[in-house]
Length: 268
Image (cartoon, rainbow, N blue to C red; front, side):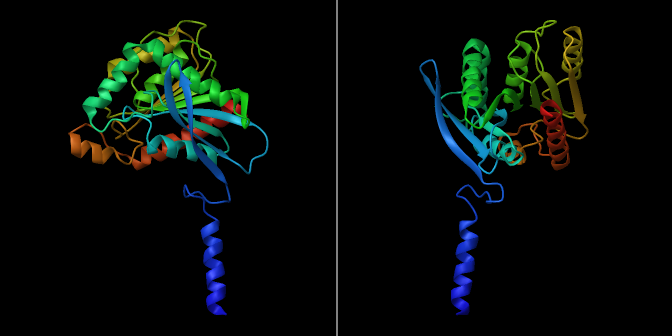
């Protein structure tokens, strides 16, 4: 009898966790979703809490230069746990990922060298998220990491209809500068103070650009934080490829909390 009780208990524990490792107290559903921009298939990942009734704000998550990978999907699930519908987008097409910095630089460069294509891919993801049954189409924001941070800042600069964008250790130099009256989104930049890829001059130029364009923004420098400070794999990449990257748990947690407060203020 004891063995039967133990077996039933173990079965109940097993059933209380979904395939993606999320517990049923939030009932996060994560699914790969294919959409398209032009003739290119894009491989995204949509996450939302099935226990929440009705529509809720939607958040786009734009990946690092490595491409759409598990890190971007993890962030989408974390946002779903917070009560949002989140779509981790694919900016490279076909779910393409880089395994070496040379490839990552090539893939990212192709997007910014043909920025119209990048804009089209972002907008395809935006429309998909906006039209999902769980999303409030009037409440949309975007976050991005490294390459993705640069992407969301660019989309804000050109006047994309977003409530807000958050850049985590993203590049600040513009493809096209923000113009007065153009930017609709409120902007939050979470930058590592020791990031070798973002110079003080670039920070100063960004601040001046935002102020001239009369953009509501905040830029936070996290002391001791280097490039890619939110990604626990940064240390592995730094060692393997001799890159100036480092994970910083404190800055990761602080910046995520700041983003949480930022999104709450947007959608209150």
